[in-house]
Image (cartoon, rainbow, N blue to C red):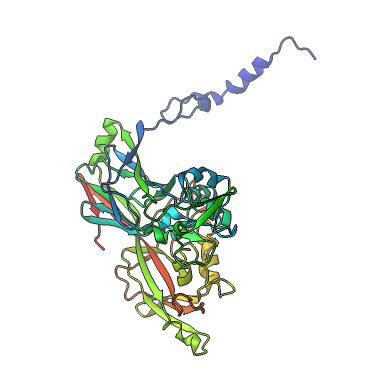
Length: 469
């Protein structure tokens, strides 16, 4: 029906301009909110910059290499090692390795490639210094194990891909003989975990930060689908797409190229001056790595017909320990350079232990629980994702929260003070393992990585650890 005395516009005006509605839309106060306001939320102005720093000495397998951080900006938000590895394949066959299966000695099932997760296992140790003060020390092996439950699934796929992690198939091992550029994020203060706010550099102008790494020898970084201990592809002939050729000799293989990449932010003068005057406390995860070896004596009870082998190992750590990540590797896998393999092939469940117990001051701090608790219950309750590996995780933190915008954000929640803990030790009820044919006896290595919360404080133009231990 046509009503000339009314209009659509009139109805809209009546909706927003009658009575108390005017007070809501036109409230004359600073905190008033207009739902039709077009302005965006304001943020302090900043300018990001990516800088690449070359090492102070030559990069060589099996030797130490050192970088001095180049930090001209105001906030450091990322520190990453960018890695390019040499190959034993002649240069005319490098490109073809991406589309063809390159196999050795005429056997299509025998392939060689860098270790799965090579960006991690390349580094025997990673140390971060402030002047002569050691702020962080950890191995790439420990970073690999600790990172298996870190971050979301989408983030994990990208992080592992950049680190050279693959599915373990023969084709993936062969492809890993010529890996593309790799990346490994180092655990720098203020930017070691997702959600960290960065390291304010404007309050540390007189401070020099250095990164020192120890690389593994090339002989410990190659794996194969065969049973060869210490695989040496440079001693074999290869076939690719119908062509047969010899690999480069050990001397002809080059050295890795590793660059330190940092992302830094430049702030406005006003913000920079205010930030430099502030006292800033930065809690960060500091790693304490305990490495142990279980030899024939530890497994002797199995040889005597007993079904139980009990061992005790003391832990060394400081500060408030939030997690203890324990992983095992057989000596066969170590000699074959399968450093990523944490599985016991003689056990139906792949575990190296029946139960693990934590003792402090002679009293049980954590009861002897089986792997169902340490590997499944704890991960389901507190970790961001499952590692699908035989890793024992003792976790006293509150765990990730589903309400967090970024679940990977880490902050101190709870833990055990290992600075004052009296004789912390692990009691392990072991499972049997196979004899290493190369050694003639049983041997297993395991690592217990204690993740502690240390406190770095910046004040009066300098920074340092608030507590020595």
